[in-house]
Image (tube, rainbow, N blue to C red):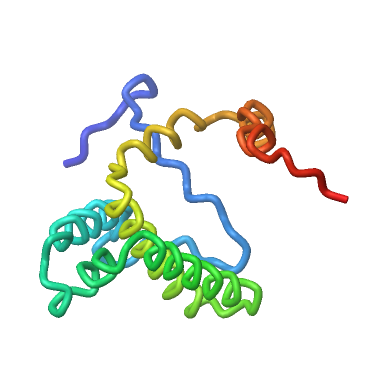
Length: 148
């Protein structure tokens, strides 16, 4: 028999996810979530010193920062192309490629994901316009060239 709950004891229902144009708000079976990125990070990190002949991550890492950055850029462009073309399923695949190559780039740079998560937390609740305006103009100070 279900116990009656008074107003002061009521449990708040979670708010439904915001609707995004062209999407259906349904969680996949198994409730896959962002923790997959932690597992992917652990996998890429564990392959850092592996045999490049046996691991794609090890092969990328052995080729150096420039090649890793190039691969990330290529995947990002492919992701953009699929987004503009409206190819949702291809965009999902390319997005996964972008995230993977971003994590490879972080491993190469010795950057821990927690540093990025902390930066996202710092920005949470701050207007993107205000956050961008508050950034130091690093590039302006470095660029002394005059553009005609």
